[in-house]
Amino acid sequence: QVQLVESGGGLVQAGGSLRLSCGASGQTFSKSVMAWFRQAPGKEREFVAMIGWSGRTTDYFDSVKGRFTISRDNARNTVDLQMNSLKPEDTALYYCAAGKRLFVRSPAEYDFWGQGTQVTVSS
Image 1: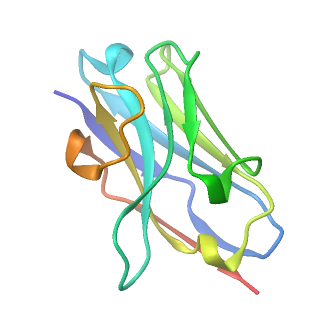
Image 2 (image 1 turned 45 degrees about the vertical axis):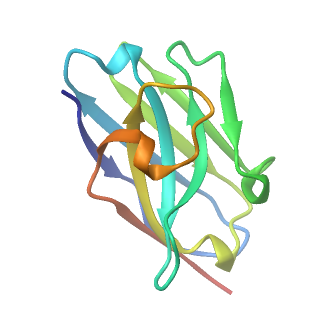
């Protein structure tokens, strides 16, 4: 019972920054684990970052650790992904997802998904 809509994607040069935002509607958002995934052409959908109910617990994929920051604002029903020092390898369609358990990295374990927002990083 969660609807998700991503925004904030675009085209940036390597080394630049973008901030993605995911707006949620539904009664269960504040008790959902939220995550960002990404999928490049010809590749599997991969985990990027997750954040727990209150925002106290976070987890990041190794390749983005130190560059990306996930945050949430339950009062506004939003989850953001601040992406700094972007690399061409970060180019992908980025998805927001909602689930029930912490530290889950499999897309199959998430119950709700947004439509995706494209991030393209030029070299």
